[in-house]
Length: 94
Image (cartoon, rainbow, N blue to C red; front, top):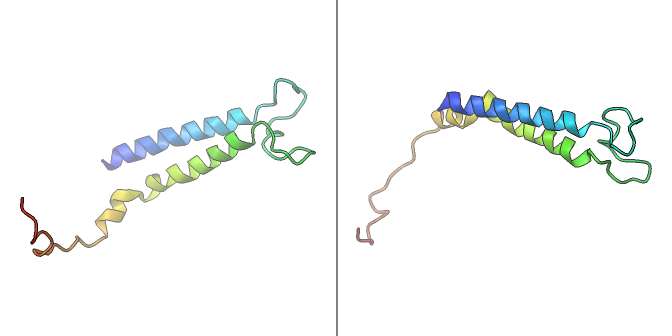
């Protein structure tokens, strides 16, 4: 299970890096613009054409790096097991 989490996190990390790279391409209507000029705000204060894809890729990379480093399995290993009480299902019939 741990191996599957790491492999999935790695694939999603590569995909997010790809999205960040592609969002930094200059727009078709302005081929003279340098790469990654469109991921910030323009002169009018509006976000550029690659703003949302780039920053969503950054967020996605940050999120998928969590399972690769610690993972939910590692967090579950250090927790104590839940307590079970016999009175939990006392009034219910099976």
